[in-house]
Length: 485
Picture 1 (cartoon, one colour):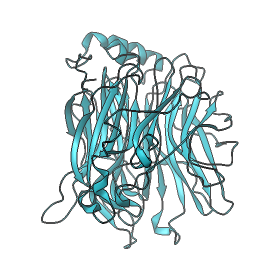
Picture 2 (cartoon, one colour):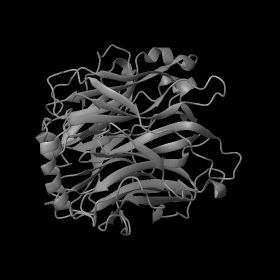
Picture 3 (spheres, helix red, strand yellow):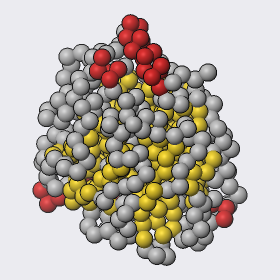
């Protein structure tokens, strides 16, 4: 019999007496890397029958992770498609000991091709949810646009997953559903405790209208409400769902001038009634991007990442070039808000000097929960993981083949006022030779996530070693990185 959310909360507090030996935060200001662990390997098969679909095996990309107590569940794409955007299967990897050991596998019954997958935990119903967009490539149109469908797979233990069931779609018009994000309200005193929310982009290429939609489940993902549609006819791309302790929900996204939008903006959309209605879009800030960079070789989309601290501060990171001379390269930048309406000025995360020539992109942010704070994390702590190229000038179109990619990490103990020294988690990776190809460039991720587990930050990355010298098969997999603080 599953535990109620309040019973689970009580059990977690009881775990304080059996804290693992590595829990708690030391005084090392460098945010040092403790371990880097490969948590899965791609053994996927081609689910479709279309011989024109070029699936690259031994490739894993675009990871998402969630945690509850000492348990972590990560999901990702396996078998990236070289001549489109998506993968042949959705994988998972689960740890029961804070990321020291892992078990991995695939979502069962997956027979389509997949874009974008994200995971969350519903503590009230003791259920893990993986949300994915499925596309039937065997009945695609000439532009690979339809049909697409939002699906959910559920698990009570992070190991045994249900066959995916529809949440929304398949759509019947030229366009797509895309960029889903899922979050569950695990605040036991929230009026919407136990609600899980899926937010996504709903794009219609015939009408030129796009919206951000939300569907709600209050039974652990078994059933989902009809979509609530944003009042603005201007769909951007969802990059996160932020839920405060009072139950207020915020969709955090970015739009790029399409589907009725004007300009390039980060934005927030609020719901105060458990997803029944959505407020008007609030523009957070105009974005400035050095895009595309790396000689046009990398697929990089400027999606934000969001977290909520224990004091209800929403922190959002993305990448932006406004602080660099001639907007030549991008920094990781951050803004914060207590109410989702009034946002602080964008500030750069000081990873390296402004004249370094380093280009940064694809960032994730995490904040500690109450248990992590009890076990030693600062209440104002933030963890940020990201990718970077140390010298973007070497990545011009004529020499992109020599462009080197790294994974990095940085943390703050005071809500972003000051930052640790940055940590190199992995590298170099040759962008052109080592990474999975897509129709839009070489790829590691559109989104990555940082979390706290028993007081310490962890990050997840798609990382690549050298290809097999005999077969040429790629060697790109998902890794979990643990840091001191």
